[in-house]
Image (cartoon, rainbow, N blue to C red; front, side, top):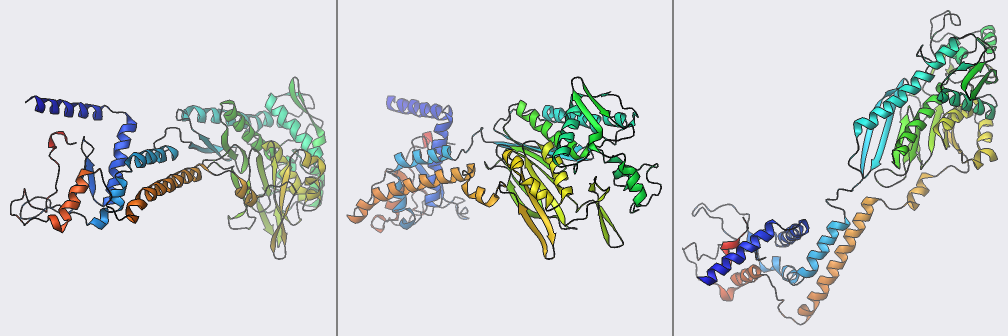
Amino acid sequence: MKRAEGRGQRAEGRKQRMVGGSQPNRLWRFLRHRTMTLLSGDDISTNSRGISRIHPSSKPSQATGLTPAICPPPSALCPLHFALCPLSSILYPLLFLCYLATGCGSNNEPRQFTWRCGTMGTSYTVKLVTDSHSIDNAEIREEIRKTLDEINARMSTYDPDSELSRWNDAETTDWFPVSEETAAVTAEAIRIGRVTEGAFDVTLDPLVRLWQFGPRDSNLATEKDTDRIPNNEEIKDTLQLVGFSQIESRTNPPAVRKRKARIRVDLSGIAKGYGVDRMAELLKHRGFENYMVEIGGEIRASGHNLAGRPWRIGIESPKSGTREIDSIVDLGTRAMATSGDYRNYFEKDGVRYSHLLDPRNGRPISHRLASVTVLAETCAEADALATGLMVLGPDTGFDLARSPDFESRGIAAAFIVRNDDGFVQKKTANWPLADIAEKTEPASTGASMITAFLAALIVLAAAMLALSIGPIIRKRKMQCSCKTARQIMKATDPRHKKPHSSNPKTSPLLPILPNDSDDLNE
């Protein structure tokens, strides 16, 4: 009686330890169970004594209603199954290490959050990679929305109440008070106008309206045909209202001024890039290091993507009527902007008229340059330079892009030029090559996990081989600590085969189990 009581108390204690065990202990038992399942080909459960039990998957017998136990042949269990039993002290720790190395079940795995919405007449995209799972999506999206709405309310030419529209409508040459942001963007536009020798000019608004690529102005374009070609006299008169040198900007106090009252300013060639910079600064201020932000194709990135690689961005092919990737660039922690003539244009009498206007002659560009992509430190600079280099053309623009001043500031450019056979690329010497970067960049997180898992498997295989080679060479039977497996081998050994009995309790078709049913796992 006391022996039975002691046995019951020990069994109860083992049950409590198993129920209240830590997660690693439960994982240990699960790995052990699944390992034996995979090796034997059947479903194996483990009782509280650590004894493995085989549950065959055969259908119930119609005669008895019981599930017959069809013992696997020795070849299915030996030598691999029996070799693993004495190796359990090595196998389970290795499997557990594989579990940890591959990061399974980890709550610190990086995740990507993506937000998209409309702004500035186009759309924006934000991709944020972080291992923090406590991000307030609504709060970040609201901050981004407020930031872009503020920029739009200050620099939009389509909003009649914006700062820029009110300045354009004010026919005065006095200083006009504006926000610090509007003054700073205007000053940057003037600087890049000087760098590109007037090819980038934010005072093109009268010409844009004359060619009917922007909002219509009844005073400048009397006809409503979208493909109306202005005559020379109209172009000459409009050019009198164009020139970045006719505007000024100051920061203290922030204000802008026109030297001719009728001049109108359009910041759309730099405002989207500035919006990208503001979004990037917002994320950086919040402590994020890995992100990619984009507005209408103008992009800025930092850190790496979800795969652990630098952000890789595709440059669109300038082929009309299709959207294909021409090449890929590893953006890294830089900004990128592309300008091209292959989306917004019209044709008349066999002549192609692009929306990109040359402020020096008042006409659409007519050279063979199809697109320019610029990499720079800020997206506002990349945005404006891409437009300026596009206007300068494949020769003058390329010479400026590879000048010592550009290279010293880390500015790189790629030109796609039309020729008789299609297109040809011209890149500055400091343009990053994606194929080289892909070979030299550090391995991604997924590759590291696979490498760790394979290394653990190699160590496991070497240990199994080392412990199995001795018994195999000496032709000895390998000993096994698995009681059920030894009983299965005994049951399948012809020397121990017993006569068939009609009693289901003694039938060899039923599983042979140890007599410890009092502490089985349910």
